[in-house]
Amino acid sequence: MVDKQLALEWYRKMALIRRFEEKCAEGYAYAKIGGFLHLYIGQEAVAVGAIGALNDDDDIVTHYRDHGHAIARGLDTNALMAELYGKATGCSKGRGGSMHFADASKHFWGGYALVGAHLPLAVGLAMASQYKGENRLAMAIFGDGSTNNGGFHESLNMAAVFKLPVIFLIENNLYSMGVALHRDSSISDLYKRAASYGIHGEAFDGMDVQAAYEATKRAVEHVRAGNGPVLLEAKTYRFRGHSMADPEMYRSKEEVEFWKQKDPITTWKARCVEAGIATAAEFDEMEAAANREAEESVKFADESPEPELSTLCDYIYANPIGQTEYQPV
Image 1 (cartoon, rainbow, N blue to C red):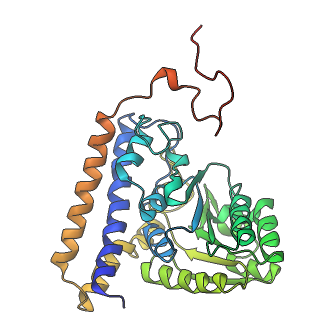
Image 2: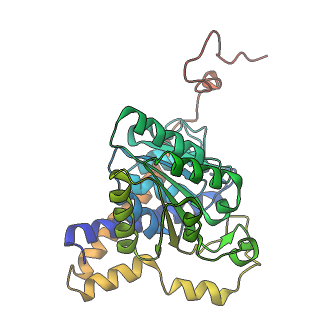
């Protein structure tokens, strides 16, 4: 088991992700959040464990279900909620919304909406690090549905050929939107696809934060030693629908309830208390702190200003050339 400080911190982060997501669902119901909203509830252990095994300057690119990854990376929850509310104080100035959280200072290069399209970006980041002789690695996080498209296979092949410092992390929650894994994949253990490219592959229990941390730690050591990329598969499950618009007609309530018995937050607390690592009261304090932070993020977002109309053309290019200010007609 881990020490007390780490056990409580992992719990606090997982609880914060859960409470933040619940506040997102409320905000969406009140029409304060527009567009699509993909909640991460149920998968918290993957983000907290896997990202916790990285260095602060390792690069991360992820998919549209990115709230949990951003919080695990340490992005400011006020800025994240404000981003969801489309406010000027958001982490992407209110222009990205749910699927495009980003913070360059955290080497968190964004959530990407197109399935699997961000994997080549992780390969590019890893190639740049290798070319410059840096010790930094890249992690690409994606769902099981991404493993059936061309970008996945091309990225793994190129990373393997050049022995690039990159970790590919599949969050296998058993469904590509509403399509069950056994209907769109010829194999159920997706990490085995690593063998096709001669790289190391490993699966772990994605409902167990310690398992996520230890598996990723092994992958980090493998990659930093110059042995090339690793393919990790987290066996996990989302408790909510694919998005807020999902009626979940493709899975039974019994199946969802089965997986809720594996809730990564409650099981971690019970395990640590039973092992004598910390008391239930100490975990409750962490949960209360998470609740307060989630509440404060909503207040901050509510009170933040809308982006000024004059900034409509800002941030389109990294280095704007000429007149880009919006001119009303």
